[in-house]
Length: 253
Ligand SMILES: *[C@@H]1O[C@H](CO)[C@@H](O)[C@H](O)[C@H]1NC(C)=O
Ligand SMILES: *[C@@H]1O[C@H](CO)[C@@H](O)[C@H](O)[C@H]1NC(C)=O
Ligand SMILES: *[C@@H]1O[C@H](CO)[C@@H](O)[C@H](O)[C@H]1NC(C)=O
Ligand SMILES: *[C@@H]1O[C@H](CO)[C@@H](O)[C@H](O)[C@H]1NC(C)=O
Ligand SMILES: *[C@@H]1O[C@H](CO)[C@@H](O)[C@H](O)[C@H]1NC(C)=O
Ligand SMILES: *[C@@H]1O[C@H](CO)[C@@H](O)[C@H](O)[C@H]1NC(C)=O
Ligand SMILES: *[C@@H]1O[C@H](CO)[C@@H](O)[C@H](O)[C@H]1NC(C)=O
Ligand SMILES: *[C@@H]1O[C@H](CO)[C@@H](O)[C@H](O)[C@H]1NC(C)=O
View 1 (cartoon, rainbow, N blue to C red):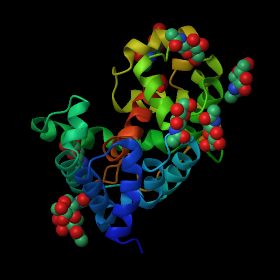
View 2 (view 1 turned 180 degrees about the vertical axis):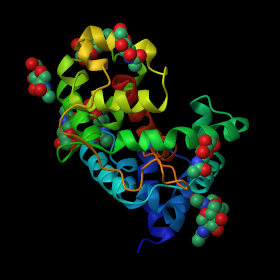
View 3 (view 1 turned 60 degrees about the vertical axis):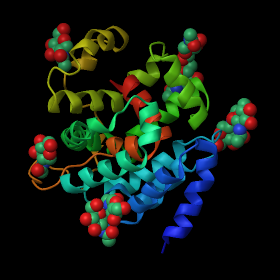
């Protein structure tokens, strides 16, 4: 069993490289230890947050998603508690990203709204391979190690336009596009012609690519008292990961 002290100590080691405040570190430890947050698989999330700056996070992300997709999704109440605790504990870090604590209520409902779709996308599989991990591996082959440092600089450069088509036009990305487009019709309209240009018109025809399956546990639309997402959770639990997620979704969408 993890203890708060052990976890806080582990997180503060990473805080030295990531620059997280002790207040933020403590909030993350509280979240990881609260039994209601099993839905975000904290024990496999921590290695991502605590990864050393130059190490690839693709392997840890793959392990985390495998775990997250197997457990029941978070309830809206749990999502609200996580966002509340992160925004209050990590206010300093978030304000550096332009977030103000007066935005918390909006953030909670945004997270709750997108969580089920983000979780569905995060749990797509190509055969037995998680689609996000597969895409990150392909991306890593194209742009170099996806370490927290490199991700931050890739995001800062905003250079996602020139990705090779064998990264962008995969069955996994097509399935992710379909999933988002089904849940939020119109959201991706501006990407339609870009993707058609790079990947061909069949890429946006809405048909399910062969070999792609949904692995999320308990994510059917009839599951009325839970919603789920891995991407939104990680956005708040790890600032480094949130960079990766923004980058990932920028290229995926
Ligand atoms: C939120 O913070 C409170 C106060 O520190 C703590 O008791 C609670 O367990 C935390 N909840 C979650 C989900 O992190
Ligand atoms: C990461 O790599 C950069 C540049 O390659 C180097 O300056 C830095 O010391 C490395 N950091 C760690 C923790 O290895
Ligand atoms: C890339 O990541 C691997 C595994 O994390 C590491 O062993 C290697 O040194 C990294 N390469 C560079 C150039 O930083
Ligand atoms: C878990 O978090 C919730 C919401 O913050 C809180 O009400 C509950 O008391 C916490 N449970 C434990 C065991 O800390
Ligand atoms: C994409 O193409 C590049 C260059 O042709 C190649 O090195 C890389 O392995 C390819 N990646 C995939 C996933 O096929
Ligand atoms: C953008 O990324 C591509 C590889 O994906 C690279 O070849 C190109 O130099 C980058 N452009 C800038 C301005 O960094
Ligand atoms: C993309 O455009 C094609 C026609 O150009 C249209 O049939 C398709 O429905 C569009 N897809 C989305 C998601 O808007
Ligand atoms: C969760 O909250 C969102 C927005 O706050 C709402 O649209 C959704 O229906 C809620 N889900 C459940 C299962 O109550």
